[in-house]
Length: 469
Image (cartoon, rainbow, N blue to C red):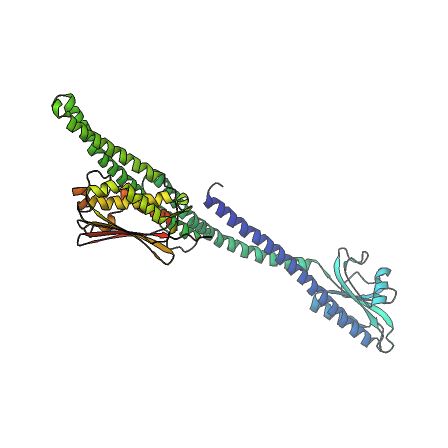
C-alpha cells in the first residue's frame, strides 16, 4: 500500500464495490417494497371485485350459491390468489381451494373488519394458514340495506414476492459482475496513468540529485495538476541546469582569474629563490608580487561581497542620493586628478531621498564611477549627473574614451566579463565590479543600462524615491 498505484487501485475498487453494495441494497429495498405494495393493491382489488359480486348475488340467493362459487374460483385462478368467504360469525362457507371450508376466522380479525370495513396484514389468520400470507379482507354489505352480511378474504403467499425478489437480485448481480469486469481494467489503466508520471518525476528528481540536469518529464499534454507538476519540474530542471552551468562557469572563471596572479607570484618568487632573478632587480619583482597579491585580495573581497547580498536587507531604509554621490567623488578625487579629468557634477539644489540601503547604493555609484575613471582618456571630461522623473531618480555617469563594442554591451554585467577595451586597459580589475552593481540593483528592483558610441560611454541606473512622512 506504499505505492500510489496500489492505493489508487484499491481505493477505486473499494469505492466501486461500496457503491454497488449501497445501490444493490437500495434497489432491493425499493423493489421489495414496491412488490409488496403491488401485491396488497392487487389483493384489495380482488377482494373488492368478489365483495361487489357477492353483494349483488345476495339479493337472489345466499352467499354460498353456485354462481358466486364459480365467480370466486374464476377470479382466484386469474389472479393466482386464495379467495374465501365467511358469514357474520367468521364461519368459512366457501373457499377457492380445498380443506379450508368449515373453519372459523379469529374474532379479533372480524372485529376489525366490522368496525373499519377492511383488513390488511401479513398473517396466518390464527392458524388458518400454515405460514404467513398477505391477506386483504372486505365486508360484504347488503345491496339495499347496507348491513354487513359476511366477509371476503383474498390471500397470497410470500413465495411469489420472494421469487420476484430473487429474480431482481439475480439481474442486479449479473449487471454488477459485468460492471466489475469492465471497471477493474479501466481502474487499473487509470491508476497506472496517474502513477506513471509520478514515477517519471521521482526518477527525474533522483537524476537531478546525481547531477544529471538533462532529464525531462513528459507531461503528455495533460492540463491537470499532474501535468502542471510535470511542467514545474521541467522548469526547475531548466533553472538547475542554468545554475549548474553558471556555477561551473564561475568556478572556471575564478580559477582562471586566480591562476594568472598566482603563476606570476610563484614564478617571480621561485626566480629570486633559485638565483634566476638577480638580487639587484628583486625590488622590481617584489613590487609586482605585491600588486598581484593585492589583486588576489581584491578578488576574494569582491566575491565575499557578492555572497553577503540579501535582497530584503538592501530594500530597507532611505538615504540622500546627492550626499552619496559627493562622498564617492571625494573618495575618487586622487584617481580623477591623476588622469587630469575634468569633473562635471550636475546635482539638483534640493536633497533627493531614495529608498534602499545607502551603503549598497554608494557601492554601485563608486563601482560605476571608478570604472569610468579607469577607462576615460586623460584630460577628458567626466560627468556625473542626478535628475528626477516621476517617482524615480536617475544617476548618469559619462566618460570619454574608447568605445565599448556593441556586441559586448549585453554581457558587461556578467561575472568576470572583460571586453577588448578592458583587456587592454584594465590590468588591476577582477571582472566583478559591474556584476556586483547589477546584483545590487536587481535586489532593489531597479534598472541599469549602458550605451557607448563615438568614444562616449554612459551608464544610467534608476532609484525609487522615498515618500517623506
